[in-house]
Image (cartoon, rainbow, N blue to C red):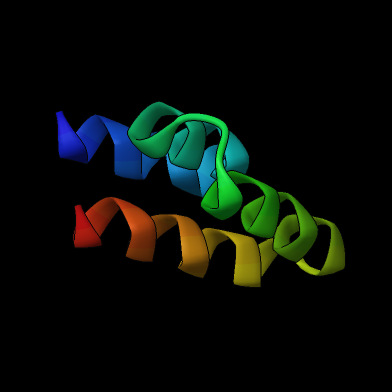
Length: 52
């Protein structure tokens, strides 16, 4: 299941974080990072998914 979440996180980083932790602080941080730059959003999303 984590592999699917990582693939989703690469395509849509906030969706990958949402599937892992729901709407919380990591979700909003990822939204901001994705708006500021797509790559930081991906890195954060993969980190959140790998951490759990």
